[in-house]
Length: 346
Ligand code: SF4
Image (cartoon, rainbow, N blue to C red):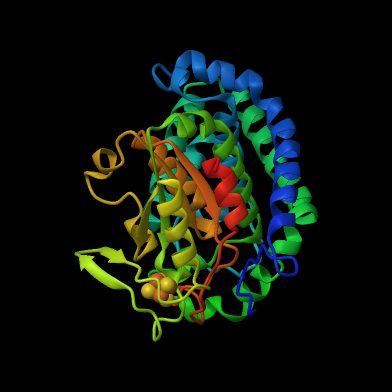
């Protein structure tokens, strides 16, 4: 099987990945425990947001700040040129301070890829800018150090699943220059690891509210189907698709059959941008726990989008990426049905 950037399979299955991500998430949670003091101060000063989220989520946000600063900070804070030459070596340094954090968030928002992430991180930028300079400096230094350790240890623990990312960036990303998906396809290896751990942290944080939901739905991307030329899928109303079960081996068919047996709805999503899209997403999924099956790089953004809409969400990453819209070829993707069943508690 051709692997484009990441691939969770070891041999025929991704079972080992789920053990590895669980272990590395435990390590990351220990790393984030050092943020307890600043999280308490943030909670005390942040009004409503101080009570509705767990320390785990806040720790994940601080880690996200550190990783995004590491990857994009210097580009975002260059005054004259905000273009993003992914492969350029950074020969300049920009001091990580709260005014630069605000500039980073503005730049990320402008890419269109980090809308929900940015919304959450803006509260941290506001909190930090209200603090004394010495406190800001200390916290941002700690955030940078934690991000650096996460990057090093993530490479050791999860690098086996993302070993094609660097060559994709070098060989194929230049062809995306000037295209809408340049930032989407240009994610660095540590961003893949951040999304993997972020999805696991969210799964743990939101598990109880998900399991308590009256109804369950699984959102699956259209790239899970068998090659388009053979697929008999029909569009039954605008944007809604019906699998006709033409192939027993097709992952869409397997998830659909599981949904019929175990009473959950299956929604086929034609494009990633349509996940929780539209003003009525919150009412469509009212009282519904939703499992999002998606490409690794979209997990964090979509998880926070669901959280903002009040939807109890869980994530299952695709075993590998493959849709033709973004990657250099179109291949049918897959998911770990054992993990999906575990998440759904069936
Ligand atoms: S089983 Fe469903 S999704 Fe898969 S190829 Fe057939 S119609 Fe398409």
